[in-house]
Image (cartoon, rainbow, N blue to C red; front, side):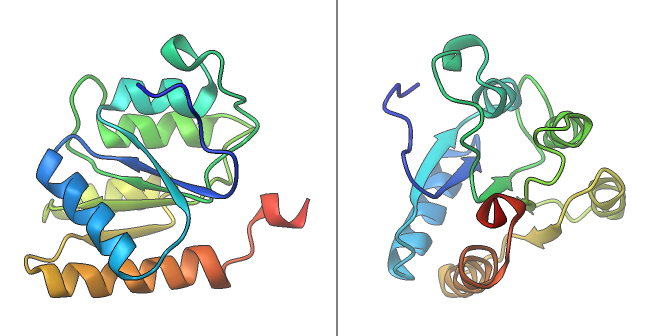
Length: 152
C-alpha cells in the first residue's frame, strides 16, 4: 500500500496477477497515457481504496479515479462484488468501471453488465493486441468521455 495517493486525474487498476499488472502499465506507457495509475491487488483492497477505508482511511474518497480497470477473478472479494459495492453507493454509482479480464464465461459478461459495468473487455493474448485495446480504452475513457466529475 502506497500512502502517496494520486493528486490529479488517475486510473485505478484492480489486478492481482503481477504479469498482467506489468503488461497493463507497459501498454499505458507505450500509448503515452499520462495519467497516474494507482494499483490495488485484491477486491477488499479495491473497496478500501475507493471508499477511503481500512489502510486507505487517510485517502480523500471524494477524489475518485477517472476510470476503474477491474479484473474479475480477485482474491478476498471478487470483481463482481467490488462492482456491486461501487454501484450501491451514491458517491460512486456513476464511477466508470471497465471490466478488464481473461474470463470468457458468458455469465461473467452478463453479470458484469447487470451490475452496472460500463464496458467489458477480454484481455487479448498478444501484447500488440493488448496495447491497441489499452490505447482505445485510454482514448475513450480519458479523452472523449465526459464524466460527472469533469462536469462538476
